[in-house]
Amino acid sequence: MVNGTAHRTVPRAGRGAGTREAIMAAAERLYAEHGLSSVSNRQIGEAAGQSNTTVVSYHFGSKTALVRAIMTKHGTLVDSIRRRHVAHVGESDGIRDWVRCLVRPVTEHLDTLGVPSWQARFAVQVLTDPLMRALVTDESLTRDSLRQTLRGLGRCLELLVAAEVRRERADMARHLITHTCAERERALAGGTAGPDGSWQRTAEALEDALVGLLTAPSTHRSP
Image (cartoon, rainbow, N blue to C red):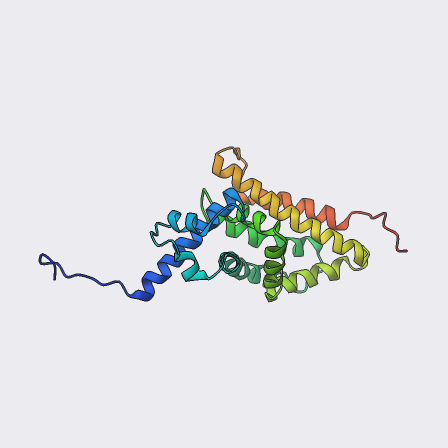
């Protein structure tokens, strides 16, 4: 009792979880703004309101583990949305249905983050780092909803486009989604998105572009 008021002790586990969340939020913003290689653990700790200069290492061990934790957190939320979309399309043979399963979970999740958000711009930084990209890609492919989406798309495109061309266009599609979402996020944060700059409109535009990309005639000839 202090001055007649009961002193409430915050459980150690609760404090630790709050500190981890603060570190992840600060790291996501700083990495999005400055890149992975330009931000130190000390800067992240300070931005998270922590005076201990080793707090990031204490909670995450390494930058790789911190980046993976941030991406896994968002990936889990995107996955829960994608599962609903996949269940809705069932065994559809419509390319647009599967493109929607690819795009909408990302844009719908980003829409829940408010303005400003940092996730899309952070994802660009991660995917332009070779080591981090490999780690994140491997982790995302363990999610059954994404594997189902890619199988559905592959089944629809199998008779339209050669396997090598499909692989090339899959890389293009990933870059298109990632960079388009990052630019939309930046525009929303800066107040330059315009009256129709919603995530809904972004999803529609991406769907149109990706259907065109994935189904376009190819001049590729097998050797």
